[in-house]
Figure 1 (cartoon, rainbow, N blue to C red):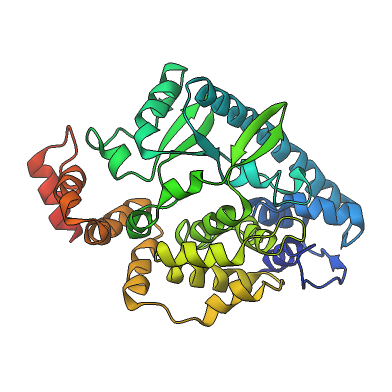
Figure 2 (cartoon, rainbow, N blue to C red):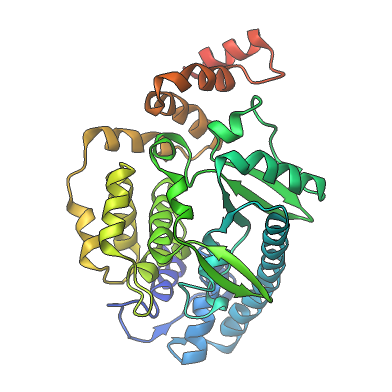
Length: 353
């Protein structure tokens, strides 16, 4: 591991329960550390450390970190405006929704919003509303990144629909993760408890802390093979909040219903491996808790670095997790999307096998 990566991990742990309070001295060249902090999305935490005097370095390096953070915050504010506009459109259309991930966590789990940058807008809607929500955004100038595989796929099987509007990516979610763990979760439960955060004079509806923690674990374990430090930090912050802690019992019950023990186990181990933080016992216990073999088996397809390879790997396990009544429609949509050449598609499937 490079010196910049080690420094980024120490910086990402600033303010977490159990983290070392020793001063962090940056002795790497400015462009290398700035790149590492940017890639791991912890520039904001680094600037807080500089302000508090816990992050030290030469003037040029510290100035570079602050300048990079200013640039990231300018883009983050544009994304935040897009989140507000999207929420207003959905409100006006009577579509119930929840703002997810960075746009919400910056104003809830973080010590201050500037600690937590984000790169897109994530919104959850009920599966029955996703077609209307996507159509609404398209009418207002957004464009889909990828066409729907077949009519009805998004509402029945999709994880999310990615759109772009004025250069901003908007992910309209039906569930929190793709694949079998998305099939097993019960997304309607995420609409039972609602929190509202005030951002730019608009009340953004979001999840309660327990559901945010569930989502953070799923995102870390299943979203990327190597999650960025800001996402690991989300778990530590949500799990140990002194003012608005997660409900331990409800967290456990949700994970049990959603068959997500293997998901949380992987998320906890990844967090403990890279952050200097003490997780509460109800969460840290998952690192050594036995989980069903079927759940462990379903984790493997998520560990493909290539998006196309990951989709191909997840398809068989998704089919296996689906009820029998849904399998023919899913197999048809994935195996033979609208507009595809049947012969070419079969050759492609055989080549992948």
